[in-house]
Length: 264
Image (cartoon, rainbow, N blue to C red; front, side):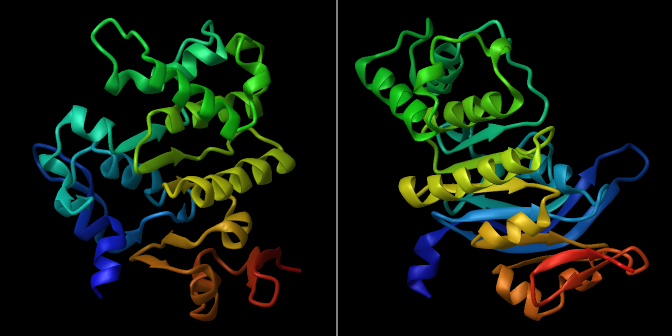
């Protein structure tokens, strides 16, 4: 039990998420409980509109929880300062707000912002970390290209490199495979798996690619209509969690192959 406690990185207790309003809060999901361990690839999956993005925004402190608690490195998330959080958790969002006029190197270097002085000067250590991050996602050859010259897949790798350069314990990605073809969806998720193994960082991502997540993730968070289930993919399969995820009139889950099939 002590080892498990030491390995915990992110924990939710009786968490309720949604939107605060004057008359009545709009609850998206409640009674959410999970414990995520260090150095794992964790996939957050579920049907459209179930609340995956709301849960992610709550976990990264962009949106306040309605009730319950979130612990990051055994500290209450609500008590961690913005600057302190930036050194523990990095984010790759679907909406890219960064100017694509920057070069790849300049964009990745922005990941060092929590550690630089007020004018953003990079030290030798910062430069080494930026170059290491570029190498880790195999884009060193693109470092002098402008971001607007990149494909969607290349740009997603740049954003992952920026998160690596931030050097946090946890990296959170909101649907990192959006707009990518099947090959690049698999490539990005396999890259994330490789990064957890090489760096020991915890990577949590939301995705519609449930079949790929089952194959690659150490742990999965499955958002259903009335509950959020957290477990290893093999246990989720044996417990029939995926069988009840979608209406059976169109698709069904095959336990043998661990994938969804169109109902004939």
